[in-house]
Image 1 (cartoon, one colour):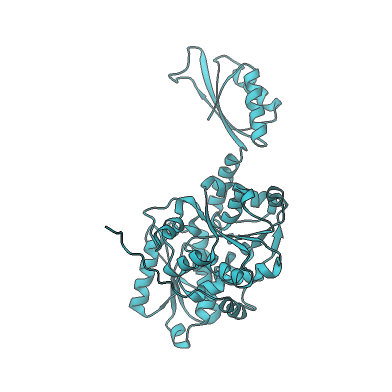
Image 2 (cartoon, rainbow, N blue to C red):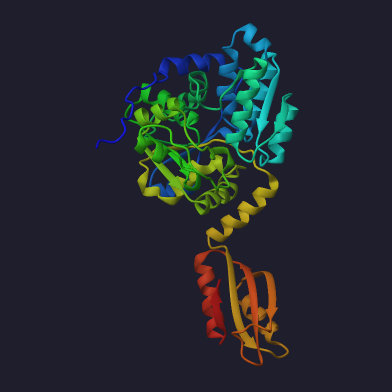
Length: 412
């Protein structure tokens, strides 16, 4: 018995001319964001690597490009009815600012898990914010119902040609700023940004390789491409809330299938390591979703032919999450070391351990005693320490020094 037929019909793709037209609309509205060279990435790749800094865009991400393009192309009558959107944060801010600039009201539905700074920023741009549902999926449903009930125009975060064309202006700037680019790396959630960038880049330079990057815990594109239709993930679990989208749309999937050369995924460790890299080496404040392209290059630098442009798509990160991700990134980079040591239970034992750690240059962050563990002998105590090191080589040096001093050391 043959399997179910998959439709081969494909919606029309956004053209290079449509992206150029969107760029005309956005003159004096969006910032021409800088392209910064990253020597740290270039050394790994073996050629120039540039960061396209959309985290420095108005509202802190690329989303203003697509939102403004979409709302600007509404009729006066449509804008008079107001617009409605659903977003975890960046699209919300883009819609809110675009609506204010164009003189129409905006209502934005955000999931209950949306970071507080993104919620407050959306309100500050003049939108009415309504929280509801655990994920963006529920927020999208609520926004669509609101549009049906009130007559407001629903501004989808990615599944519309005008939105894709607006996001594609990032690609035009990349080509202007780096004419010899060979590889463009772009994060992907629903796929609006990578669809637009691919449409712009392939229209002018079909030889340029375009790579989409998803968080592996929220990667809907691989399964959807395999099935030939959008397939929703049953669950997602990633710190990269900006690209945590359960399924692409028919339109964005068609663009990815037709224009994107490769889809890659990155782990949570890759994301946190890349965020720390951007903070320390590029002096850029970024959010986990915004740093996915950098994470892919860091994780497998030989896979990207230079010159490479990695799009840093957003910088709207909750300070509390930033602290957690930096700590996670330091652990992933071998900068944190957790150890358990068995030592004699007598005065001076802890001081001896601390002296050894000081001698080898390890910074003690936490220390705990355990005297009642089932694995301990009578007269023995277990010491648990969390250390800050200079990296994996230094961490190995710390363990070796403690072992030479006669301690039984167990890394956590």
